[in-house]
Length: 423
Image 1 (cartoon, rainbow, N blue to C red):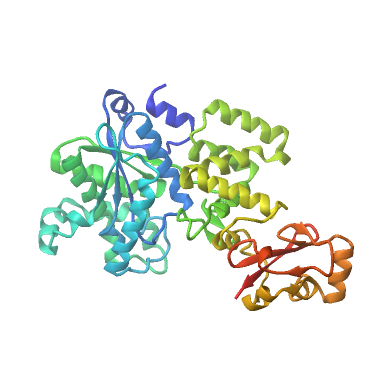
Image 2 (image 1 turned 45 degrees about the horizontal axis):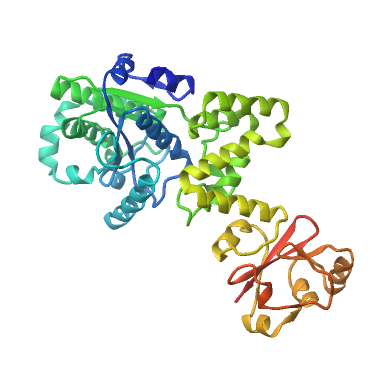
């Protein structure tokens, strides 16, 4: 199957600037680029659709040029936003660039030669301009009427806050990025989300005017849930690719909670499963939705892609722990991620070294109303430490009962948990 047809069959293509792109992708190895502004030190799972699309095009024989916007990140793209971004200082932007570069290098093949990806930073060329030279050499190529007509600008112009001159010039900078990459890296295609259409076509127009050459754009659909909310947000906020911010377990659980009406599209967008495999999972959604097999496969494939087999193993182990498996051999960070939303109490390490009676320990947590409640619960086999049942009210809890270096987990009944942190 031809490249563009294969992408369309998965629902990946939102729009293309020129139908001739299909033939181009069959005739040659096309260098294409997608950009990320370092507005934070980690990309979100919502960014993963474009990353997976880059990886997919690379697997089809084309070369990704990944741009991290060290310069444009200091300004902020108005596309898809109702208010202006907070401007970041240069030091923060540079730290974010380094962190994002590290993430991207784990997701796309940067091996040398062939169609190995290239990573660039637009600060390397945009910082060389002074204002007068940029206005003379680049700014004169743009018409204000055309810039005002672009959807991202029109929407902001009609809002209460309007759009600042700083953000208004963003499309000029991104267009110049495309021209620079066309000249220096042979990039003929820019990819991005649907809200990038105006910026992408601005670059195509600039290349046509300056180089009298043909360039192309392709946008992917906006990924949302059934309520139209942007994909990648959980109840606790965004789900990030950095495991120090959002653990593999948190990403796994976020994907396990995908709605039945959305999960098949997510499998097409975010995984590299064949369409035949996805069709079988779609049948599972229709016939046995309670098993959540499609969600489980989505979670497994995406977490493995982002965090590797080790991250997936941790996420699956954490999931088993939350649903009753014995808690042992985990790190404090993993334990914190698994039980991030349960009550926490502190216990002095000296008390643990000396040993503390289990009734006293459990009564100190908010799960039980007092010592009598604890004793009654133990008698009914409803008390657990690290998901192991407490057999006797005479048990002395000590360091041997730690689940991690600095914590142990207590449970009442089937689902009520608390974490005892060793201070």
